[in-house]
Amino acid sequence: MKHKVDIYCPDSVVLEGLLETPDSTTVKPSGCALVCHPHPLYGGDMYNNVVSELCETFISQGIVTLRFNFRGVGRSTGSYGEGLSEMIDVASCMDFLASDSRVSSSRILLGGYSFGSWVSMKAAMKDDRPSSLIMISPPVDMYDFSFLREEKRPKLMVTGDRDFVCSVKGFNELSSIAGEPKMSAILKGHDHFHGGNEDAISKIVREFLAEYPL
Image (tube, rainbow, N blue to C red):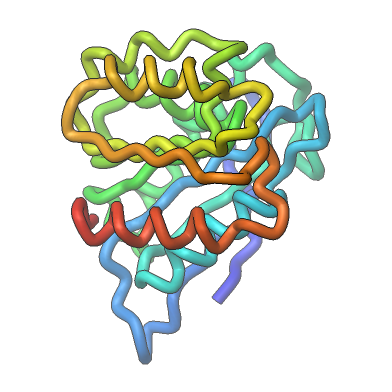
């Protein structure tokens, strides 16, 4: 089931969100996932193809899922905040999940695609509530991810071998320095947008969830 929700930030910004819950008659929710979308200034929003694929995968695994529009996108108020204000958005969404009786708030998976992966990982450094982390096409050629060196929570990192903001060299460097436990994959033939190849991402995410269940 899909529920449109409003998420209130401490700086008076109101975010547009979509909370999806598995059919309780067939699948019992075992945790919750928060998914962050790509760059707001380049058309990123919560209905992006990779974000949608992640959400569908989580729901199929019985995981309650929240996606949202960063400030200034869609119906979300406010304006783009250079990634800093967007970290407030992520924290506010985690507050929302933690207060919602429909989810198991002690088991939160935090993930994102592209810009959303950088913002979500930076937010996670200040918040111990997420129990596992997912990065799809982390833009390692644009942002510094070296802070993940000390990150001890289970993490999944995925990119394509044709990604123009997540080079194979940069991705391999991140994979080597990121703290254990971790899983990583380079998808052959995938560019940054993964168009038409989303099912490959879903497969790897399911493998990660099998290894590190919520």
